[in-house]
Image 1: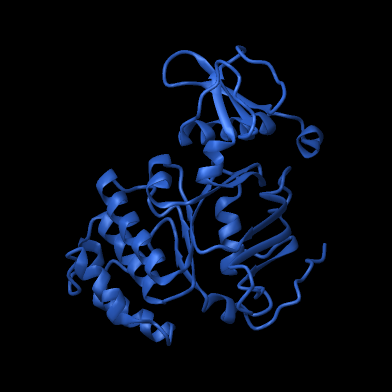
Image 2: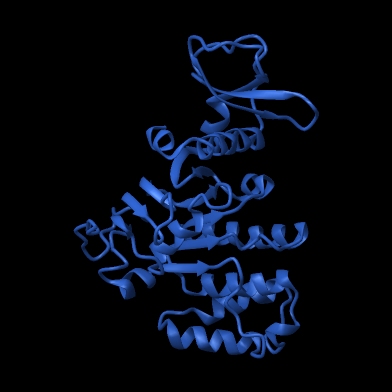
Length: 310
């Protein structure tokens, strides 16, 4: 199948930071595609959370923008540039932080800064060093002697040193303890606000999203299930005891799931201009996320033909 191509130009000022059009990615003879008919535009500065269960397509999506995965169909662009037509130009606009830091254990932190400067002509070494100094990370220590959280901070400092307008972070917090995660997000959030950049953070931890992000995208089975600002996601949903409320004016059932206790609750999509029915309350962000993860699980359980129709 031929991959559809976007007509690209040298990064016009009004081009979206990240874009996917009819994106589809299939690996070999897998029964289902990792990403299926995905349309997505991230055109605002700030920090967007990308959430979904394992296998939802989060890493695949990020890697298509980095140019590490080639779409089976459709297209992607970074500031209007297709990474498969001009990977060098696209990569120059990206700061990428993978789940496992791409660091050499036998080299020092300073060695990594030197390598980055050689690979990226515009690499701002003083900026990266400043970020590391603020965290008390010495430059002469070998990476293998650092903790997981410190290694993650080195990876982030390298990405920030690129001064790239787009940051892609593929679950960099997965193995960090709560304090290390908070420190990482503090540095990331400060940098995004100061630089006016666009960052996409893949994460499973809702407290991380609440701390750092202003927009939420939920993927499930390679499809977009939710794409809203955190403010709208909370305002346009409600939660109540499962079975206590019926569909009606201004509300649509999303999914049911167990709460923190032993009861099941239901997530509803509601019209914020319509008075909420008795028994419904404003949800927490975790309830919104878990509700859409429940949608993803339900769709995954459907036969292939039904799942496509859904």
